[in-house]
Picture 1 (tube, rainbow, N blue to C red):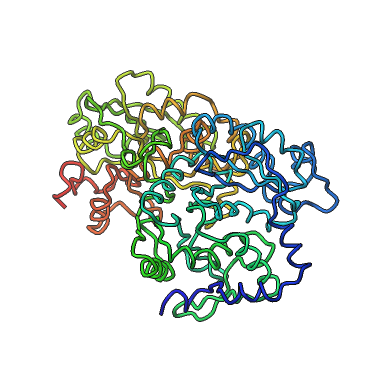
Picture 2: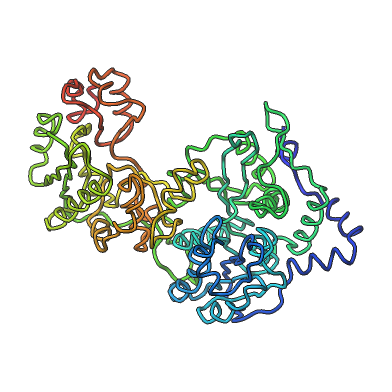
Length: 576
């Protein structure tokens, strides 16, 4: 069983059918959907294009788009899924001068809906190359597909990114250049989940707003016209023959609904690009029947294709430094921060609601660290509300930063115990001094837990796409701790439940430093949320083994009567 036997493919015969049977009226309508009326601030000298669509999805009945209406959509009751002005239009006006300074050889191309023409001059003045479309905003399609139009431009390198992800642009541009050097047609990040809860196929060979292509690889206008024409005539079967389950529908396959751009990329663009080779970035924990068939198909289609695994939830494992995109980029591929010249000094920040549960273990551990460990405490009561916990967190960081010797800060609770020697922690931080936190961006959370994601959508002054959830028990470098404390963001989190689970990573991103790009996405404290400290009074060998094998430096949820000390984990892990 191969990919084309399982997944729908838009064939050359279906394109020929369009060429033969589409009426002049249908062709004229398609030309309006995907045609460009005029270009403002053209930048033909730029080889790299970052392509973005701007339209107002699902304009409410009777609403006439103006700048004032866009800016006040929430108050007028027009902000349905999100506030388009804050999330899409405003960033393209405000962020572009800095982005152009940073990437002078990149054309930031905006495909702008005809009914938003009043924004064209301002967008161009900010530095964007504006392509004013013939079509107004209608629904999600055709607007979401305009960003694919540069695919037909020979000699260009095209990076597709959503406005909400511009803070991660450096990493995506670097992948586009690696793609070019490798001589393949595209790079991509599949969405490697087979099924939605209601048993529709959610697997995507391309995540719609995180990939790059070589220009000239597709006859894009013909492909868009033919595909749109066939879908509107129900000429494409959207069923996937999932192994072991039989035919199931693709989740997003209806014109003009949200997700139609990813449907086009999956069914029409992907089979053609696979024959020209691709770099595929896959999360190391991904498990999917369709991913297996996908990788087999791409490798068979072009042996130059490569599969690259990355750890964590986002495709941002490479730390990218600022660079000139006219350079040979091969020297930048594996850059990491230089090692510390001296031994790290670690501030242990205890958020307390009582005494430390295992004082004897900590005494032994801290004695081994000598002056390389500094201890700070903040007291909270058991009934402390979310705001109090957040204030205690900031208080600990503030006090820790006053100690000029501390290079790192680790948050701990009374139920935490060290499970690896201090020397191993110090060596790890000496070799790589970056922050360590297990973090998940808002855009990933909303795919699997919409209710949780909504907690970040309530923040004031911080766009949801900058939101990140993280474990509370993390290790911050001094640089990142200072960044977090540079501004008091707590008013933005006043209405959020459990803000301490998002505050640090989100404020880093809001301050211009994406944690997925600059931190190590890894837990330092073992925790099993399926069990409570009452269950860990008598620690069984299987739990001790899990802790030892986790690679974490600490573990938590051990009550004062727990026998965790008998395992001697923090002294020498091999004693298990």
